[in-house]
Length: 69
Image 1: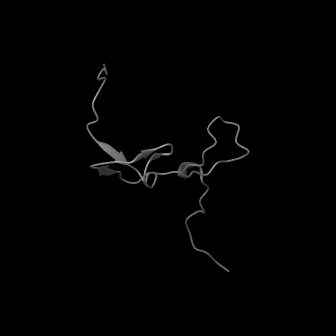
Image 2 (image 1 turned 120 degrees about the horizontal axis):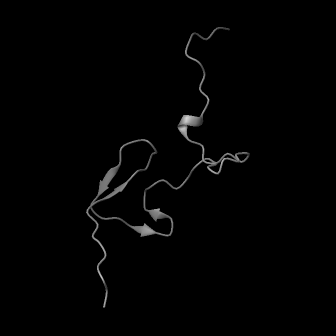
């Protein structure tokens, strides 16, 4: 006999990191997770921190200012 351990109140997917999620009425769940959710990430090969994933907060950006020739 199955034992109920909880109920799903809502399912969201986040196709783009750091952007708003999308509430789903139904979802296809596979070995890769939710259909349409993020599946790719950039990894820093030489990273030894234990968290090798490249996040926007770690990307070097050019300084603001004028660009000259």
